Length: 67
Image 1 (cartoon, rainbow, N blue to C red):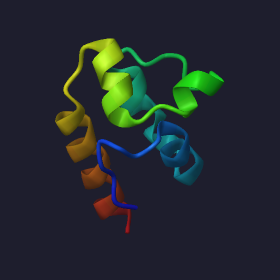
Image 2 (image 1 turned 135 degrees about the vertical axis):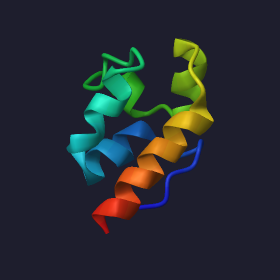
Image 3 (image 1 turned 90 degrees about the vertical axis):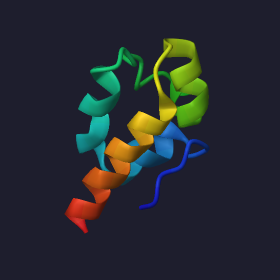
């Protein structure tokens, strides 16, 4: 899976829920909430004051190693 800032969080979690800690460690604790599952990485990072590019890089690294 290739992640971008526009990728929807719910799609990522549906692909591999083991990435949940990546979101939790930056303060995204509402991963089960319908609203958060429908947000893009960029939208969620803006709300939580975190760098979307750093999260995208971390997720892409994880999925590349898993492939």
